Image 1 (cartoon, rainbow, N blue to C red):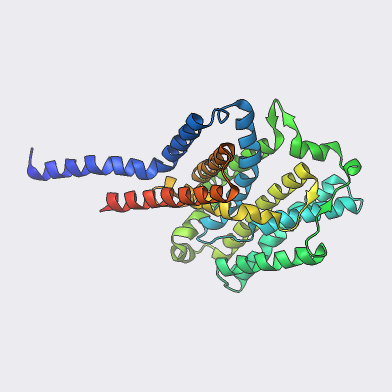
Image 2: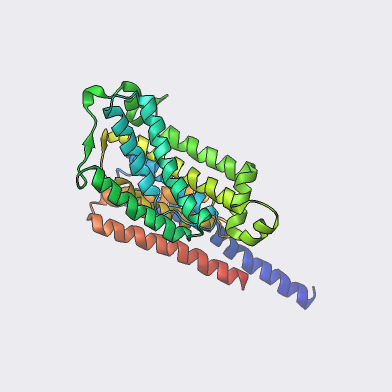
Length: 332
């Protein structure tokens, strides 16, 4: 065997393990973290806890993170996904309290989320404001509007006697033993995977995030695709707002912002699953699962809430740093 062939084979054998680690580091981290909590917390693998993890930790964050994935796919970000969650919740509660049918309230909630996304789209596509600044402005404006509409941030409760069972079913019901909110989240995930993997719109959105100039020179309306993407982001986030309202039967101003940082973290953790470091549905779902497992496991250990945040932040940093270092080493 020649020296050149020996060097080539050595390079391949050195590259593949690093490439595999860079590609599947997220899945490995999820397995390792789950194993640690299983060994240290006996109640972690019980059926009741796993159901609680999926319903209370995973479901809403997964939906908001999928919304964030759409925004990030075009090379931007949406800091106002929590605002879309809140506006959907407020619109539904307001319409129901005004005597409107639940169906009208649901449509109003979805429309409110779409309006938030549409406002972002006008700023980004219409007057060329950067996605970060545009959605940050929407976040501040949305927070102020909520404070004004609720006399300084007072919760708005739905009367228990006035909530139809169909809406309660949306937040607390089950079908064949599976919680309805979880089934909705799975439906959103599957729909997003189909959009990105099987439709022209999804492929163009990803292409915009990678090479926007190439997309523009190809004759594709960049502004139109970005507009649809951000409206879709607000619409998906609104679904989480409706499920949240159906679960707790109350609108709490700015409560949607509690999902923002974890949704960003899950989406960008998920990019480690892509060879090109691009947002993808499978990676986002694994990112949400990882954050949900950590939150649930740390809660079971009895750690202070603030230490839980430290643990989550450290894990996000570790996964991203590990993937980055492996990619740099493999490419070298």
